[in-house]
Amino acid sequence: MPLLSPGVRYMLLSTLFFALLNVCVKLLRHLPPLEIIFFRSVLSLALSYGALRQAQVQPWGRPDSRFYLLSRGTTGALALVLYFYTLQTMPLASAVTIQYLAPIFTAVLGIFIVKEKVQPWQWVFFLLSFGGVVLVKGVDTRIEPLYLAMGVASAVFSGLSYNSIRKLGGREHPMVIVLYSQLVVVPFSAVYCLLHWTMPVGWQDWGVLLLTGIFTQLSQVYKTKAYQAGPLAGISSLDYLGILYALGLGFTFFGETFGLPSYAGMALVLLGVALNAAYTFRQARRPVPVVPAVEEVAT
Image 1 (cartoon, rainbow, N blue to C red):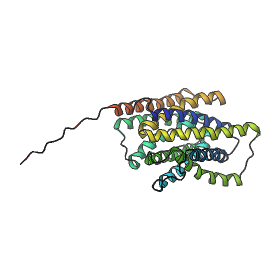
Image 2: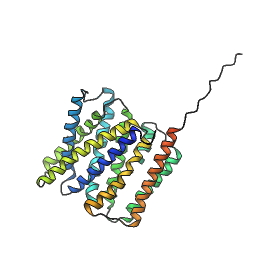
Image 3: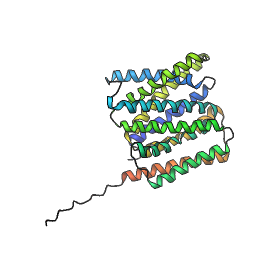
């Protein structure tokens, strides 16, 4: 897989838009997470359905794909709800760093779900990144154990969701996969809004809510394309680059800073992802040895 393969480009774009979505959620921390999810999901649902109609693609997918479409929608919805709670209760970079355990769970679960092998050196790189997350949590007293557990659970559900996408392969249009995510989360979040409605404040809140839908749609479409195009272990690791966005955006918008040990932990995460990506690219470029045919000896 070349360094700037379609899968890599799609994942870099997805990470950028997801970082901007994180800022929007943090700016709306006075609103319940499920209310934010409702608005962004309704907009994403409308955009996805409109795109499918324009492309004349059947929106419900093939019958043999629906199990994994529903699996993607359900696990993705659970991951999203938990992640939004952590965004509103932790420093931005800390919440993002914990969520970036997802590539580890993606690759590990991929061993059993899609039968993709993880090489021994990749386990070392994953442990390096995981150690960085542990270091960030250990020195940041602003992270409560409950929200840490929610962040880890979100990463597990994300791993399941990405494996469902990989199982679908290229059988379904990316917008069909995105559509199913919204079909699951919209009814659930709508019930919550009916029972616990909080009115957004002014045009600023409504504008940011609109942006959450736009950034969500762009991030999901490009991430879906990325996982359809490349190997899980290599593509999923690029997600970690969002930590750099989180550090910069967290400081710019919210004045968040960290001590040296936290920065060291984040550096370990980035080192692990860089080594894993480089290893994956090198393995993919290796020529496949040609095994000569064995002539049958007459007896």
